[in-house]
Every structure is written in C-alpha cells, then in structure tokens.
Length: 123
Image 1 (cartoon, rainbow, N blue to C red):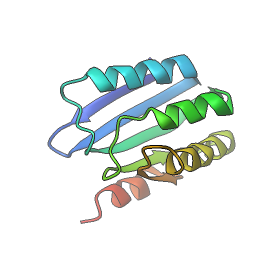
Image 2: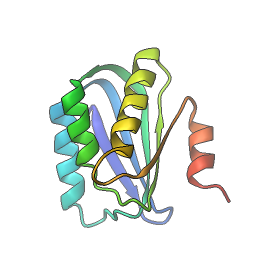
Image 3: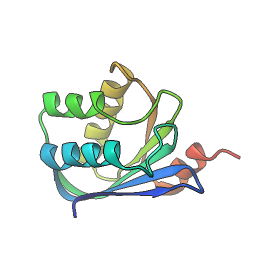
C-alpha cells in the first residue's frame, strides 16, 4: 500500500509510511481513515516517512487540501523524512501549507530518520 500508518500509543506517535507514486486520492483516503480510527489521538506526534516515494502526483491545490485536512492538533509535533530532490521540494511546500492552514501544527522536514526522531522526542 503506497500510504499506510501505524499508531504507537505507548510512544504517542503516528507513523505514516509513503511508498511508490503517491496520489491525492490515497492521501485523502488515509486522512479519512485516521479521522475514524479510535486509536488515533490528534495530540500524538507524527512521523511521515517518505523515503520510499518515487513520485508525488498532486497539484498544489491538492497538496493544500491535504494540509488543511490533517487530523493533528496545533500541539502535536510532526516530522517529514525524505531523501530525493523532488520529495524535498514537495515536503517543504507541504510544510508551508500546513503552517498557513486553518489548523497549523509544528511540522519540520528532515533528510534522515535519526534527526527526525530526535526532534520528535528530544529527551
């Protein structure tokens, strides 16, 4: 599955994994699943692991819609990990859209998993 997530209640972390070509429909469907998931808590942190993404098939308007519809609170810390030039540009654009959305959250992009995890769990 190109878009999937796991809720780790003990670590208060939602880990979203993206792989292959990622589309608006897949991301939107994932958001809807998260909103209905009883395990989901909007105050949890989120790790978006996009290191296996091969293509992002979204327009700017679609990316903005995903940014507006995220299920996390403004108190949650969120990190995106990517490692391809195309994905870095999209991650930074998404980060900007989230920061300027109706429901902004603390989102930061990283090039490696270890840095993202340290940022999410600084202790």
